[in-house]
Length: 210
Image 1 (spheres, rainbow, N blue to C red):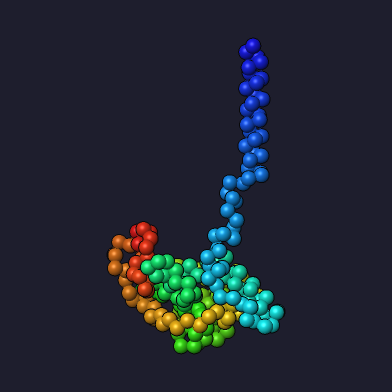
Image 2 (image 1 turned 120 degrees about the vertical axis):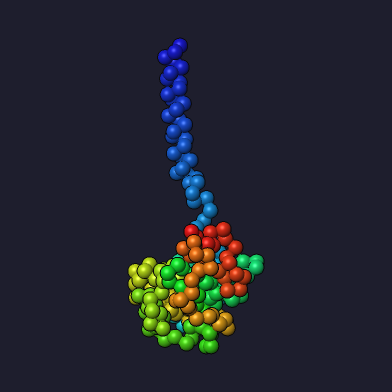
């Protein structure tokens, strides 16, 4: 009797293991939510590119949109309001970071607004920032202000696609203050403090990292 029970237990154990791995295979618990769902809000907020009449250029812009979306450029370059991201001001800048030993930097307006946005910059200036982090004023962007080291691994075609996409965004007049390399964080014990230019300290318990 004991031997029968032992074999029953072994068989049940094997069946449970097989069932568990079958569950992982057929219903992967970490991919129950489609990856597209994580970027849905950003994709829906992005302006349509249907106005680009040249199919080849529109395809390049769509590629740039995809790259900018999966790299969450909107997370820093779309301003925050009291209710969350201001999608009507998509990519117009407004994040501010104060980093110990480096000063205060502001995320730029990447829309093609002629007075406050990217229309003031040449194609080479924009691509140079993506390629090496070198800003038009001649300094290298702080890695937390802009993770340009990751973007430097993009191909020239990828950088061009992002440039084309940015040139076709809706222009938004949103003046961003100049960076200040001399400004220290208000909290001397903090390594960094993150802000929104419109709502103050980011509504995030990790806004000030110590």
